[in-house]
Image (cartoon, rainbow, N blue to C red):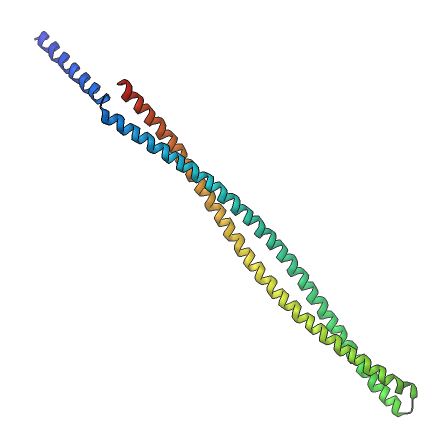
Length: 209
């Protein structure tokens, strides 16, 4: 009975060894492992290419972000300057209107004095009319400057809005680039791990282990 049991055990061990040997020396396994290795190397190459592309995109988006940030700062300075110009021109208009009112009052006084026989005031009438004409010309120029200032302010606000919008878009692109770069680096680590496993499987197939 003991001899029969030992015989069965020996047969089982030999059968198992033969199966393992046959499996480890199966040409299909070697072929599959080689194909897996080639595919993983190809994936690694593509992922490294993606990483280079992601870095280029990230650098470009950062450059765009920096440019748009500079544009925003410049737009703010332009807006501030145009607001200051508008305020100055508004003050100039107020002064010129005040001068016009004063020169008109002087003209009325000189006319009345001229009627009363004051020859000096009669001579001043021509000067008053000339001052009034200059005041009106200055007021016209001030109003024109104000219209230009208000148009510049509207354009500055529009450009500032657009540049801020571009800046927000750049920051979104940068966040997306970082996520893509992180994902591709993760894929590279996985590809390297897969290649390591494929090489190990291939060695086992070659050495029958």
